[in-house]
Length: 400
Image (cartoon, rainbow, N blue to C red; front, side):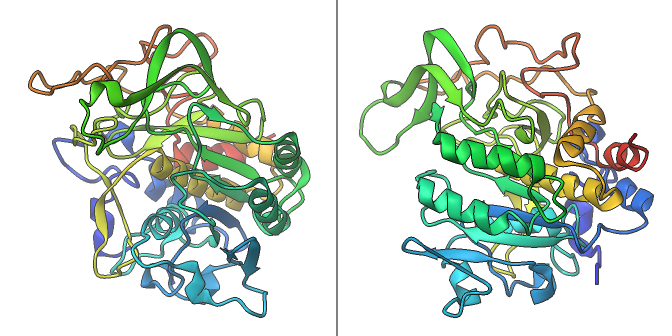
């Protein structure tokens, strides 16, 4: 049962009802209007798979075991799934690991005394990665096992991890992902693959004449500035695949989040919190409200392009819910063509004058210094725009 619940009011990313100095209504996904258009909260046959730090399956945010169309976690090289004799649901959660549970809740939490997700009636298929999801040290063998497991079970696949400056996968993996986007999935119409763009204020697919900061390491005892990794080349092998969406983030003020990656390859944007890249200093804008692995401690500060990508994955589930005949490529087109371009192009907040070692704190590099949309309706900061759930389900219902 879906119960919007008491925390819904704080979830500015789902509706336009929160009156707050740091909320611009243009940042909302308008899910409340989408649910009204659907006359439901999504189709329980529609499944979103996630690849992250796992998920606490017994969390009340998910309403019970029927929320999960499947699940899996790694023991060594073995992917133990819901159907494996030696698997245990408790293996899906590692103490202290909140990210995966929070992501699943952003997609499909059922509310009550917990936050609600974008598609609360749709189901989930979480996979716990064999390593820390933020490190992206996922072997080719593990990726192929994941893809084989979700191949006939999911409609949407969320990849919340990536690696900068080079997100390189073997041709075998890339071909398999391309195959799934074309003809895989629960319906045989393809799987929509949604990827977080990254939180390092740099391009994801670009070659530059100057070195661009992309990663910082702390604790070395050296000044901050020299400790930032830089690269002239950025490459992401999934960018050319038409069924893969790379998602940047906008703040609750409808501006580009300071940390959000940008440039060629960005397809869409969605709301998230705002903070200073690398240092993590909070900037103007509210965080996302979602569950954590502790049922008594939901968070109001969830952030990152991973959070934005989870919201896009949930919206894709609503699109499939309203029109199950759409192919994955058509779902991607629906999301892009219905996206909102009514955003604040200011987007960059310079560092505080009191902040030392600010050489890393740069605006997007040339030629991506502005977020305006070109003649093709594309922006290097926002892709084809901010996902708009009600416009997406309306377009999907009438898709020719």
